[in-house]
Image 1: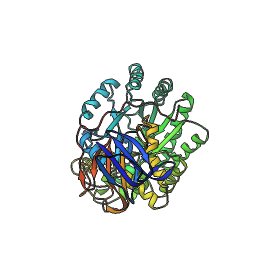
Image 2 (image 1 turned 90 degrees about the vertical axis):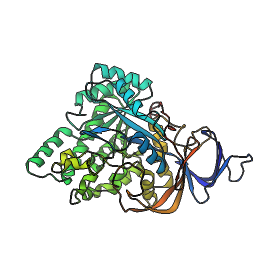
Image 3 (image 1 turned 30 degrees about the vertical axis):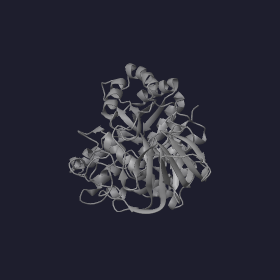
Image 4 (image 1 turned 90 degrees about the horizontal axis):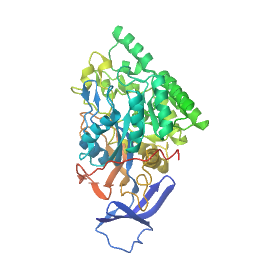
Length: 462
């Protein structure tokens, strides 16, 4: 099918230009002056008064992720469908290596989960939880298979935790094979002691999740990860950064010229520990790691996005229903499944930064689409409106009003972390590789449309 998206303002990290976009099949074939396209097309999409931007790329999701005896509520089908509704046309999900298993068998399991089930395109990161000679060799094979980002944990002893020595070995391997180490940076050993002390004292409410994971321990772990990366020469990507202390460590490293990158998430920009403290166990809805912080951290995070010390906004989408799943932690906050829903609302929430003067339009596109495309080896196939790129296109109405609610979202979770929040801006139309998947209030996508993306290396390192 050929499509003409006409009359809109085409956005990129370098500016906004009035232009028409021509799509033929799965690719963009031309970006031309308004009204100048001489050919005929099958479909015309009127984008007058709206923005036309590259589809969002969420580089941090957890679909069907096992955790604490349950698994995240969104399947690859429901999660990618919800993502598309929110203007995200690519996700990169985490394949989770259980201790005692291999990376390649883990990759196979995640392909079994995702292949043929996704509504939009997808790739994988690899969680490395068992570092040994076999794992280190398999990292090379993963890179060859287009999975070249490896997440490690300084938290969750006994589950995902890696020692500094194990992290050093994996970083040395990534330095050799071109991969990037992604780090969950919290001091899990100290946190476990604080958790045990809180439970022993009878402090069991959800807010204790935040109080036992103080921002200083995120800052310390981030600094330590940066030093390990400096020793090994490996690039480092800090995931879901939430605290000003961690951001300071990242900024210092970047100012020194080190290849250190970081992402934050909408929940750290819009929610706070006050949500974790909601009564009647409502705070359990907001349990994620790192935890929500005091509101005083939010200004630093917005500034980090402006200065590029924070390069990307992802969601860490890991939804667990309040009923039956979050409720596993009644009477013991340490048993509440860690994670929050968000894949559907990332583009809208970060646009509120534009509305509020925190970000420019160009930076909105950069942190939600173009930079993730480059960071995860997908540019220019993804992340830009340009001839030859995939026709992943979002038509966005900047003046529409909407109220976020579990009653209207498409994620397979029984609550919204942003229930009742009134916002400006809304996705109007979404194309995934030239197929209209969202049109107003209509869904036209399909399970299996999404394709696996074998990714190139981090393009900021070339």
